[in-house]
Image (cartoon, rainbow, N blue to C red; front, side):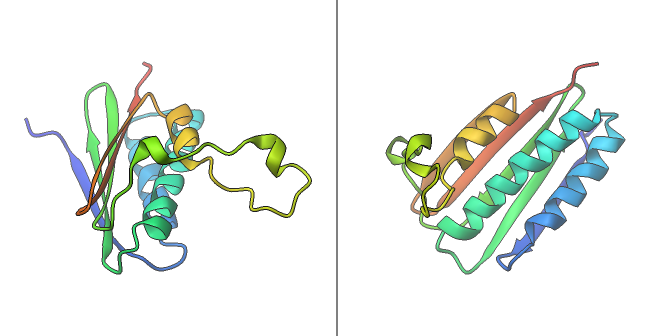
Amino acid sequence: MKKPSVELKLPIIPNMELIATQTAEVIARHMNLNDEQSGEISMALIEACINAFEHSKSDSNVFIHFLIEEDSLIVKVIDQGIGFDKTKVEIPKIENKIGKEERKRGWGLQLIQELMDSVEFESNSDGTIVTMKKNINK
């Protein structure tokens, strides 16, 4: 039997990540995930979408694929942007952010990895694919 999947094609316009999270919530309910798991998926998805919107330097779409498996949900966020080198992404030092006017940003990749059970990044000059997996604890 073919595993169910859902695919979204989102234009890069403000707040489109909310469409992705609404879809994730419907899928989480279908899979009988608890509220904590659903929330973690939504937060990771928001971060991945915002990264794609802000950093891909693309004016095309972001594609999101939800693959529903027996014991996990796999979410792929795909952009057709400039790509990035994960080894060159610096995690900000919190002491440099507290009490300063500096933007409180830059933790997206680390947050995604904390929220999901596994995360893979594939990136080159044709774009980036972020593959996130949440295992289902039954």
